[in-house]
Image 1 (cartoon, rainbow, N blue to C red):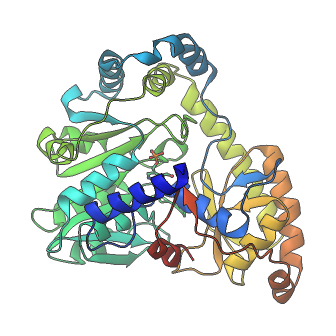
Image 2 (image 1 turned 90 degrees about the vertical axis):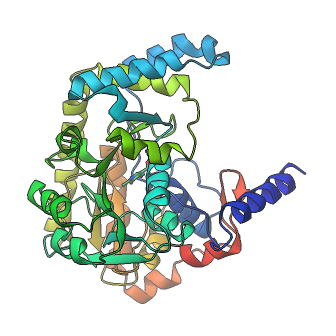
Image 3 (image 1 turned 180 degrees about the horizontal axis):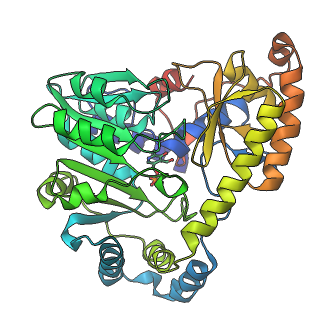
Length: 405
Ligand SMILES: Cc1ncc(COP(=O)(O)O)c(C=O)c1O
C-alpha cells in the first residue's frame, strides 16, 4: 500500500515538474545505488562500499557529541543555528553572510543553478567525463548539453568550454573533477570567467576541494564575478548522510536560485557542520589520511601494471582494458562494490578511496578479477533479475533505466 502510494506520488511529481523530461535529476548516491541494485538486490553484510565517494570516517567526534546533545531539540525549526553556521563560514572565509546560502547538501543548489540559468535557449556546457547531475538538471530545463573533452592532463578545457556555445547559460566546472579527481588551474578558471558568453555564469563545484591542491574560487565570488561556488559537508567532513552544503555567490545570482524555494535546514547537520568548521585540524588530518591511502593504492596499482589516472581526491579512475561494467559485476561478486563507468571511457571504472582495510580487500579482489581472462570475467557476472532501481524508497520511472544501463 505504502509503496503503491509513494510510487504514484513520485510519478505525479516527475510529470508535473518536467513535462518534457523522462528522467528525474539523479545524484551521485542515486547513480551509485542504481548500479548496485542492478547487480544485486541487497548489499551483503561486510561488503566493501567504494562506489559512491563517501567518507568512511563519518562525522568527526566533536560533531557527533554536538548532535547527541542537540537531539532532544529535534522538534524545533531552528533558523538561528543556520545563521550561526553561515556566519562561521563567512568569518573563516572572509565572505559577507549574504553571499552564502545553506542547503541540505550541495545537490539542491547545483540543480537549482542549472534550472535557473539554462533553458531551451541557453545551454549547459560540461566537461566529459564529469559529474552527471548538472546534465540531468539541464534535461529538465530543456537545455542543450554541450560536452567538452577534458584536456590531455585531465583538466577542464576552459578555452574550448568558453567557446563551445555562444548561447551557453552555465559552464559547469567541477574542481577537482568527479570522476577523475584531477584539478583545473586558476588560470583556466579565470580564462573561462573572462571569455564565457555574455549573460552566462560559471558553476564551480568544489565538493572535493579539501582533498586537493586546487585553488579555491571563493575570492572570485568576493570580487563579485559571475560565478556560483558549491561546497559540501558530504566529502572530507564525512556528513553525506546528514546533509549540509552551501551555494556561495553574489546576492543577485543567489536570488535567482532562491526562487526554487528554501527548505528549513536539518538542525543536527547544521550543528555538526558548524562544529566541523570550528575544528581546525580536521581538514589537514583527513586530507593526510586520504592522501596516504590513495598514494599507497597508486603504488600498488603501478607495481602491478594497472593503468590509472593520478587523482588528488578520494576517487580515481582505473583502465580495466575490457568493458568496465563486467569488472564492476565481477568485483561485486567478490563483495567489493566499485563505482561506475562514464560512457566516454567504457573501459574505465571509478574507485573511491576507502579505509586501509577496505583498500586491501579491493586489491585482493581486483587482482583476482583482472587476472582472469576478459571472457571469464564475463561468465562470472552475477545476473540479478532486472528490476527497476528503487531510490529514496521509490521506483525510478522506466526512462531512468535506459540512462543508467
Ligand atoms: C561533484 C559533486 N558535486 C555535488 C555532489 C552532491 O553532494 P551532496 O548533495 O551530498 O552535497 C556530489 C556527490 O557526490 C559530487 O560528486
